[in-house]
Every structure is written in C-alpha cells, then in structure tokens.
Amino acid sequence: MQIQFSKYQGLGNDFVLIDNRHQSDPVLTPTQAEKLCDRHFGIGADGIIFLLPGQAGHSHTMRIFNADGSEPEMCGNGIRCLAKFIAHLEHREEGDLSYRIQTLAGTIEPVVLRDGQVRVNMGHPRLQGQDIPTHLGNPHQPVIDQPLEVGNGTWQVTCVSMGNPHCITFVDRLADIPLADLGPAFEHHPAFPQRTNTEFIEIVRPDYLKMSVWERGAGMTLACGTGACASLVAGVLNQKCHRKATVELPGGPLEIEWAAAGDPVYMTGPAEWVFSGNLEV
Ligand SMILES: N[C@@H](CCC[C@H](N)C(=O)O)C(=O)O
Image 1 (cartoon, helix red, strand yellow):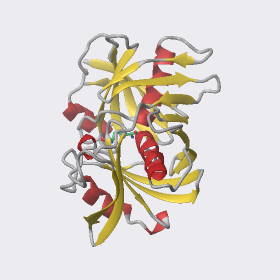
Image 2: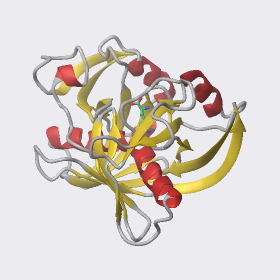
Image 3: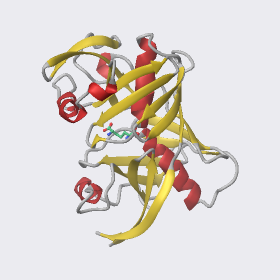
C-alpha cells in the first residue's frame, strides 16, 4: 500500500504527518511508526502524526505515535504542525484559521495566524499527583518542589500534566546537566507509572526561561511544546517566573502564557513544512 506523507517541524521537533481523514484508525501500526521514525533506516522523525476525522463538535482528530511506537496524549509542537498541514490540505491560506482538535488530552484549539505563527489554546494544566500521574507526594495535591532521587543526586521537582506527564527541575546552569544520562533515569523512574517527559529549566529572567528536554518515547529533542507550557506553569507555582514568558529551547523560542490559575495555557510558535513523499508499507 502506498501512503503519502509530509514532513513538518516546529523548532526542530520533527514529525511525519499523514492524511488519515478517510478512516478513524491510524493507517500505520506503532511498529511501522517506530521504523519510519528511525533516522538511519526510516524517514527520521520524533513522531508520526495522523489527521483523523473530527467527531462531536471537533473539526479534526489528532493521534500521534512517539519514535518508540508508544502513544502520547498530546504534542504541542506537533499540533502547530498539524494546523499548518490542515490549512494546506484544505487550501486555506488567508486570515486567522482556527481549528478544534480532539486529542487524547481533550480539546485543543490552534489558530494559524496571518504571520504564519500558530497560537494554541493548550487547555488547562493538571496539577494533582494522581492526574500527572506520579506516586510523589499526596495524590490529591499539586506536586511542587518535592525531592526525587535520580542517579547520584536528589532533585527538587515539580510535576505538571498538559494531558501528558512532565517533571520539571530548576537548575542554576543548563550547561551543567548531563541530560543523556539523567533523561532515561527520570523517564523510567518508579515514581512515574506512565513514564515522564523531563525538563530542566534555567531562569534567565522572570520573563525568559531556558529549557532542555528529554521526551518520553523520543529521547533528547530540540523542542517540546507541552514541556514549555508545563515548565512555565511550574515556574509560576514556584514563584520563579511571570505568567507570560519566552521559553528558549535548543531549536528556538516559544511564547507561553498562563493568565491566571483556572485559565488555559496558550503557546505561540512556528511550524514549517519540510518535504513530502510517498512510502510503501
Ligand atoms: N514533542 C511534544 C511531546 C510529544 C509527546 C511526548 N513525547 C510524550 O510522550 O508525552 C510536544 O511538543 O509537546
């Protein structure tokens, strides 16, 4: 079977996108997705994203497989790419284009702005321990500045779910963090029954954060949109940053805003088409 695909990237977090609007299940299995994400034997990507038909008041549905074939609930950079992909498929190129996308994390609303950036209503952060999920702290309370033993050290972590789990640590200097060693140990720590994404944050100024990320199911990536949102929320909860800030990732900056507790988080950033092709499966 021949399948058309398009490759997109958001700040270097790269995805293979597939127009799956003709059926409600992804046309590829997790094993096929894992092979296609391989950077030597496949197309190479951090994940495979499927555009499925929308249901119950949604314009579309998004499903995603990570590079290891696991299925996360949401992807922030991916949904910006998906919005651009939809605009292209539907030949809509003018004005602010809004969509209402169903994901495993709930309804997410991206808008393709006139300048090509994509602003996304990322939904509400979930803070209770049981919703991350994590075994740290009280399951009915937020997990803020809790000690976690990883590697040879004890890290003060804050946990936030943006539909998918994030564990955030504030550090003095990002350059001192051995991410390739620590990332897998955080991801598979028994405190996280569904594994976790892991972010290290250096506060440059209250309105400017630097972030490095180890993603669940994908490893070290150049950017993570849900991670940037979760990190700003963690910064606010720890009184370390403003409610609106730039989060600088290895692949570039995202603008993140959480206007008030009880409000959704907004993320604004780029998404670009890279190339398209056909694959035989
Ligand atoms: N890169 C993404 C997050 C993708 C999912 C993540 N690896 C997980 O398993 O939760 C983003 O931009 O948010």
